[in-house]
Image 1 (spheres, helix red, strand yellow):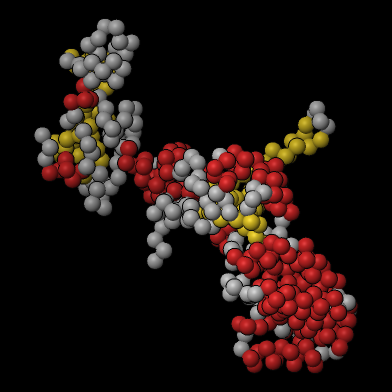
Image 2 (spheres, helix red, strand yellow; image 1 turned 90 degrees about the vertical axis):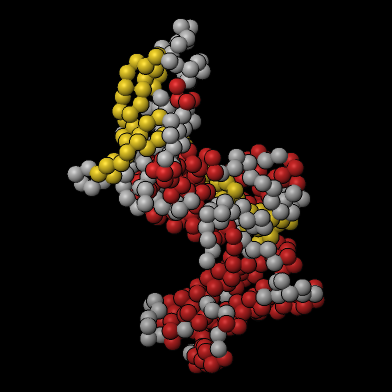
Length: 438
């Protein structure tokens, strides 16, 4: 008979007979089997009529009402009525507490969901639910296998980026007479930048074969729906996309272009200080004091800060201040060019800004600017695609940040498969409805 205590406990197939407190004040719930299906043999399905013996189990469960509860289930062991059944006897079981299980199903599910959907580590989940690390790890694996789709949905804009994990592992190949990589330090991630699916998958190794291998495993209809691919300036990704997705528009993210420009300015500043002053930069050097403003966009600084920067560089000796000022002006020209993205610029305006940047780089004798201009020229079709579409790889960069956070919380991953599973569940929580943006 189902009573109020049974409804409050919420274990289907079990009936709460009575509740008492032990010496420590912990509620002890005595249970009995209330489902007739528990009397049917799990092998042949015949309903048993003869009891072999009684047994008592103590499965662990989630807290009820914020209090730890101990369960005490007194159940029967039945003789199977079919003489032909290989299973001569069986013990009662219900879906909430499977046979030979010391934990309820919902406790295992909660431990796995805490890692996959709650962002906890396996150690935290094991401590919070009172289980061991292997139990929590297995619960997470089971939960992740059911929560993550086996095949990603079609995407319109694909993002590809790499992330580093640990150190590479090598073994000596006797036949080849060389070292072979068994675990690569690089993982390449594929992200949905338009549909919100987050991280689609990760493959080990930063090679063209690794990227094309995953892409060619997708159905042809899936690959045909990819209209654009956002990458950083990596020739490996470029070759893989041209091989596996020749119809897709290749876009270079502007974040890495700005990073290269700032790096060029910093290299010029350091080289001028080293060659002209004969030492590294010091806090007393005016150019060192302006190092942060040199890498900031002038459009995001107040006018007085820009004037102070220019005045400081102009007041320096010409052999130090002029090259740094030239590099900073070239960087600002590039930022002006990239700022035309998402503004529907006409071709004449874009090429005017590009010509101004190239002319400034060519007029200087700085190898850092020449290298930067060569990079822009090499990747100009992909940069122009960014200016016209505004597609960025910010989603992939944000996913990499989450991946690094998860790895840092777990103190690293020794198993690449576990790492991929943990990071994919962590980066798809929003798409699966387990992350509140507020």
